[in-house]
Amino acid sequence: MFQFLKARITESPIRTIVFVGILFSIIISLKTDKGFAYIGGIDGDGKGYYLYLPAIFINQNFSHQAIDDRFILEENGRGANKYYAGTAFCLLPFFLIACAISLVLGIEITGYSAPFEFMIGLAALFYFIAGLVFLSKLLKLFQLDKTSVSFSLIFIALGSNLFNYVFVEPAMSHVYSWCFISGFLYFMKSFLLENKARDIYWAAVFLGIIILIRPINGIVVLSIPFIAQQMFHLRRFFHVLFILKSAAIILGILSIQLLLWNAQTGNFIIHSYKNEGFYFTHPEILNCLFSFRKGLFVYSPIILVSIFGGLVFWKKNRLAFFAFTSFFILLVFIISSWWNWFYGPSFGQRAFVDFYAVLAIPLAFTFEKIQQANWRKTVLLICFACVFLNLIQTYQYNKLILSSWDMNFQKYAYVFLKTSSNYRNCLGGNNDLPLYNEIRKSIFSLHDDFEKLPSNAKVCKSLDNQHKSVCDYSDRDYNLLFTIPVKETFISKRALFAEIKLDRFESDKHSFNEAFCVIEYQNKSGEIYYNYSFKLNDYPHTQFKVWETFNYSVELRKIESPNDSIRMYVWNQSKAHFYLDNVQIKLFSIN
Image (cartoon, rainbow, N blue to C red):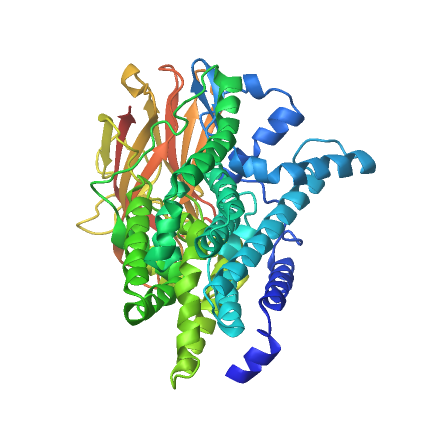
């Protein structure tokens, strides 16, 4: 098997890159609900990165964008894009091509029509392949054989969540960071080996773009000792003239962001990520690496193989071993210290994707080490199993079988390797984190056991001595309703936060599967201006006719006026049979 793979797939890194690109395209084009994989990719945070382009070139409202508290935040009385401009900079050539295509085809230029969606996907594919080319060249500089380089490329590309951010969510910043970090590492390694000024200046250009995309990724410079491998190579980096010229290049590139901020707000420097930051004294390291919510090693287990591969350097090169270990520990510490350690709705630990070129190096050394070992087949089998698992889980994520937000072990076990459409949207629950550095104040509390009048349920029923009166949802779509009048204390600067607890009894198996909690804000005219809902069942339970307790935590948007009201109710979409009891609601204002 090893010789077959070597001969048929990994004869050269370039062939490997083509193979990976074609395979990705085929898999996604066959497995995406919307048909072609690239349609519908401008969404979520990706939309925020992309907003620079239509605002500047189409709508021409860049200096006076409407504040939406999501992508455009208030700064100095004006709207400023929360996200950094680097991703838009990378997308610019493809955006302009989409404009030209739209003109030729007579399609209205909106920035979101099919030509733009397609070109954003094509951009992600271009930068992905470019990153693979840079990574291939980098690994060659380590004097690694072609087979080891090829296997490293294949397993990093197909066995990690990088796959998802190329073909499923191409507007996100990660594939662009991946490309430029790969290029930076290649030019830096080339400079350290050959001491050519051209290479250090290209490395500076790439580092400037890396920081322009995501400033924290500038920590990639701390991987230079690992890239150097030898102390006499590392000393070449500390050349005053090279450092000064490189700093000038980097600052020139970063001035793009300063000029854009000035055009939007009148200030050259702003803090765009308001009310977000790091908890450096409380990093979520174990959750970040091992949790079923977004653990790195759960959703991209090939990275665990790479980390173990770092042990290769212990005997081979102590400087490389300690440099790699130190860099990885620092990387984990910084990523896990972000207030939202799982980085919102996403697939896997997405913040690590940008640095996979660094992690590909010990993986390649591992493959070189095992070529003559008796256990090489076992390692390759594990790696191919990682690829299989990653492709299945990416498919599940794309089909809404895996939750993008709120996974745990029970949910993960329930949908493990399941691909049937019957599992689509089968997971529920809501477990939002407290906001960053929040000042929380209790503003409302309620406990309804349905034994006192008036009750918030229209129809109640007595079941037993412990549950003398319960909310009866048998054959009913609606029953329980809480109407909460808003007071001045409800008005907050940042958000509201709800904690909900209830007991549930399923009369029939899976009868709670299509029950939703709905939260609405109404103004004094009765118009609904905010609606949020989630499935109450975390996953379909096999046990029924027993009482179970559920807890939920929900971040809600700000209330607009003290004349508004909040409505919370349970919607039994399938009119199945279940009962509720001991419903508790607590509301907090967040400032």
